[in-house]
Image 1 (tube, rainbow, N blue to C red):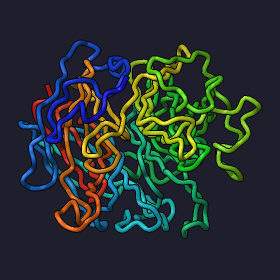
Image 2 (cartoon, rainbow, N blue to C red):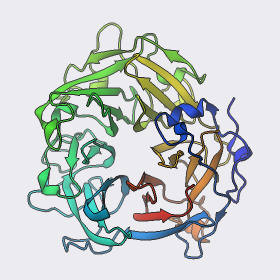
Image 3 (tube, rainbow, N blue to C red):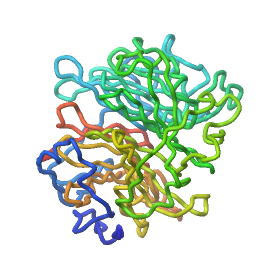
Image 4 (cartoon, rainbow, N blue to C red):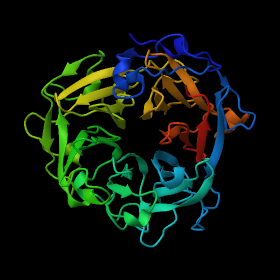
Length: 460
């Protein structure tokens, strides 16, 4: 059974003594350094940051690369707010290109500046910015990579080195002042944004996108949907006409399908780790553009379709795709409660397995529930961004199941957290955790106030 967060970490963020969740942890690292025997370890207690920005273990250090409200180095305007998903890509001469999402809604306080040739809908306030770093981690440039989109939440990298940014909205033209329909995936080239422009990949569906993962062998793209109301989101796969075709190839179209697990209408009903389901079916989506009805409400035949609450993080590892359900609440319409799940789908076997169950929620000051953005560290670990209440952490998981706090947000966003008022303390969530191509730097976003960090140290 799952251990509580109070049993895992002390209030000062010391390394774990046990397991924070149940499940076959080693399965998460298939094809990574951990699977090849490379060591990965907890790094000790978090040390309070005298600057009040980011608490890290001793021996680690951070650099602030960018903060909301500062001037973009391109001169295009201000650094937008609501920093979310992010990808890191290798450039020439040891350079790194970061592509960063901005989850701005129609009322976004600091929107992504509109730029000719890179703007989809001039009334959309979301989008992406791109940072270029030199071989020493210094910022060489920062510019708009795509503008005029909405609620750019997460996404995922492609095998050819571009970023797929996802709109987590279904707003139509005429809603919230928008002049175009939203709810699409867009491709962004961080090195040369004009190469990809601002073209919606309409065949990949119009829904409340969260994250994507690309099978590097087949080119199939898997997509999660974070729908806010019941019926909850679906897990999709997109079969492109030009698989692995390079930048712009996804515009050629393809087929969108939704996952059906026979006999399982709601993934939250599965509680035991190791539960597997063979014969997973993929059902064609009747109307991918959702011209009249949201996809999750469309008619998938008498057998129905499989839903899940809070489908968020998604990544490819080995021969499988992994995806996260951050939580499920009966009071909100789910079949059962949980505090976070990680699912594994094996395309060759058509098998779905519940590999990890997080929780339970016993102390909002410590990590252990509501996993969101998730990534594999090159040194063989798993890094998970927490999106719950109270203190916000990035926590790591070793191959042996040891859980530890890797980072804690020290930037208070409520008066109580800053030392006054009576409201419960709150800190901005983490998002966009990713690693440099050489594995030596972890990049990380604080959502509010929008801050991008580069973390270096003895990764092991």
